[in-house]
Length: 261
Image (cartoon, rainbow, N blue to C red; front, side):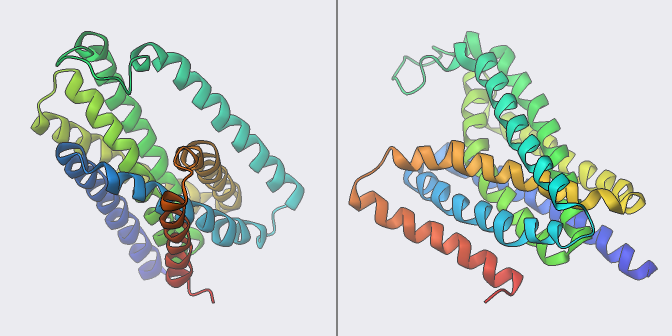
């Protein structure tokens, strides 16, 4: 039993660290080389991974527990509403800075407005990554396969988000090296969250189904309210076919990892 617990903790440590390094490094490559087409493709892949991780693996895992289904559904509803309110708060807080997004301005146009938001982004990232670490720990404690696909889903979603963060940091006056290193440091909060989640949830195993449901509500909300609308902006057949294929690929990848047929 001790070996099993020890190996689970090592898996959580390795996965959270790897997820942070991969997402930050990939985002830096995309940001600095402006491979926008690949970023758009990654959004479609993320939708397939996040929805299938939630609906085909995490939620069934939670509902197979002894927890009351009605309570779990209430938790799912509360999670969806909470993410809606959190997004509202973020939009209101950052709306002024993003008013001009999508327009071409002279170099340094946003630097003054983005100066403080650069540090806010880093603090927010640290908190966000800490939460992701807890979710990965909960998934590993429930099922090692679920831990892997949860980390995979987080990485796929984090890359497009981190690209936006890199742009804000560069506008705020950070050099590419500083932006990368500071983002990498905040990503390590995922490791802290993973270790915290492991010890907390080991002592309170009854909470696992609820944490899985909350994680699922986040994945579902992000996929449906944020990523899918981005895909809908490109509604031509030429754009739709690769989108559908990549969503399907995301689902297939999760099914392959989890051993579903």
